[in-house]
Amino acid sequence: MHGLVRRVALEDPDRRFTRISHLLDRIQLHAASLESYPSLFSVVSRHEFDECYHLAAQSFVAESFADGFSTMNTNINGTHYMLAALRELQPKCRFYFAGSSEMFGKVRQTPQNEETPFHPRSPYGISKVAGFELTRNYREAYGMFAASGILFNHEGPRRGFEFVTRKITSTVARIKAGQVTELPLGNLDARRDWGHSKDYVRAMHLMLQQHTPDDFVVASGESHTVREFCQLAFSQVNLDYRDYVRVDERFYRPAEVESLVGDATKSRTVLGWKPTYSFPEIVREMVQNDLRVTLGLTERMKTLQ
Ligand code: G4F
Image 1 (cartoon, rainbow, N blue to C red):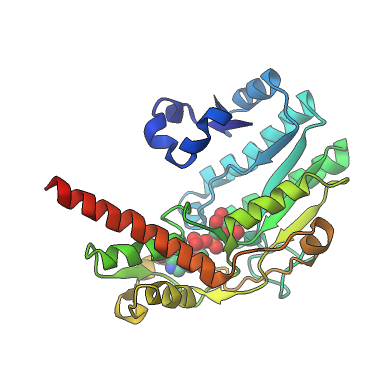
Image 2 (image 1 turned 180 degrees about the vertical axis):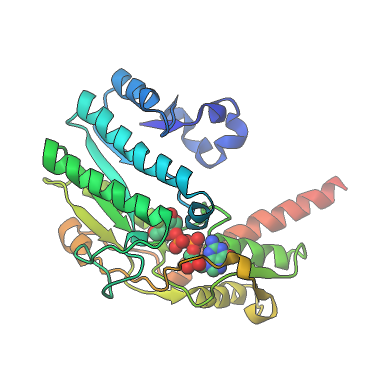
């Protein structure tokens, strides 16, 4: 198992690799950047790979409005560089592209499946459509095993704090610890189809074990509003979200994806995939994890005082 990381991360492993510290003795990390074709080419020229999971991207939709240029440069060129380097050096390597439900954007049909037309609503969504089309083109033009997963939102305790689910669960824990008193959020009525990352990673792996490369929607088939997520997360600690959530215009997006819900029939039938986590289980696990981390830290701070 090999992984690509930024050079600065290799220089500060204790802080940068906390989430993969338990794996470090089993993976080889290489310094490379999605923005540099020579750096990717160099890694692909020095090692042989059976499968490549191209998950790296600027993945925060709100940031893509703030800096659309760098999102487009990194996401589109990064995907093109990876495909081009593999085609040149290891055309037999199987390639996975992380597509996104954000490609459906202003949805043309509900639920969304592999046939639903794309209508992205952000530079991030546009960059993912481009990556998806590049992947399909390398498959058709050069016969490479290049597959795309169209994954709906997938969450878990390792989610970044800028995404709405982790922002909610970490703030619930901080409210419980007495560190903050409110949670500012944007559009509470946005609907998302939330699943668990562990389930979705299994689907990615299955896609590369098939006889022929193809594209697959991975989704739970249920949609919930941000408000419902808040309600459930606050109820884990016996609080009413209405006492803490404050709507703040700053967290609204210039163009919103109002409602997403996926139809994963193809993944279920062709890959034999199905999710194992329910929506309440995901919320509960994330809140419990944040309580453990936050309250643990508070206790440790007290012992230091
Ligand atoms: O958690 P989010 O930032 O995720 P979003 O935009 O749906 O994108 C995530 O899922 C995609 C699909 O799989 C990925 F491709 C992408 O990389 C990323 O992982 O926002 C979810 C919803 C949005 O409608 C947003 O407007 O929550 C709404 N929201 C309301 N208040 C907020 C907030 N989102 C964030 N991040 N912060 C808020 O305060």
